Amino acid sequence: MQYGYFDDHNKEYVITRPDTPASWSNYLGSLEYGGIITNNAGGYSFIKSGADGRILRFRFNGIPQDQPGRYIYLRDQESEDYWSASWQPVGKDLKRYSSVCRHGLAYTIITSNYEQIETETLFYIPLGKLHEIWAVKIRNKDSKVRKLRIFNYVELSNDNNENQDLVNLQYTLFISRTYFKENLILQTINENRNDGYTVYRYAGLIGAEVTGYDGDREKFIGQYHTYANPQAVVKGSCSNSLNYTGNSCGALQTDLELAPGHRLPLCRADRGRSHRL
Image (cartoon, rainbow, N blue to C red; front, top):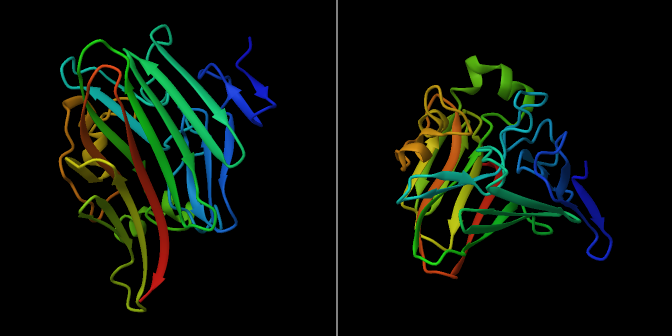
């Protein structure tokens, strides 16, 4: 069975079926800020070191594979149906959902079509910068107005060290805190350390008004829910939560009303930075 092909002209590998037998990954970034992204938007980001500079959390060799990642959820406010801009994590029936991933040189583009809504998301890291950008275009291909609520989500690590973040829960759960400021989720790590060393990370939305947010992973995902059916998306709204002594996330919500044929660009930027006060 064929899942993709090399596009020699554009120097891309094009994945035409999202249900690949394994996660097919691409590398984003430069010498300072790097990231791994798969054809279903799974992956993580880091500064300089994937082991000691981790920003976004990822679980290797997990079931299901390839999670978490850089997720964009869309919810139709009239039908209450929801899906993701990459096939996973929601995983809609591929008889109704289509997705194409283009892995290029330090960028990835994922397009999707579901229920007359088309999305195109470009993931990249600007040269010489310490942040990544998700540039999203959403088009209404329907013959009627569509009212959508968009949620973007990342799971932030609570410690720069990947191993400590995942196993040293008696420590790492108590050093991370999130705040909401304007269109930004701000995460701080070790803000109360006596030596004055604090890590700052930001997740922001450009091009639309933030109408809800969550900085607490458990509040966004919900008890006994998963990335496939996060509580905030199912019920239709973030809870404006913030994390203190738990797991951090960056989730921002916005509302769109698209006329037939209309396309709207959105942009999300995630930044990681270590700073000594």
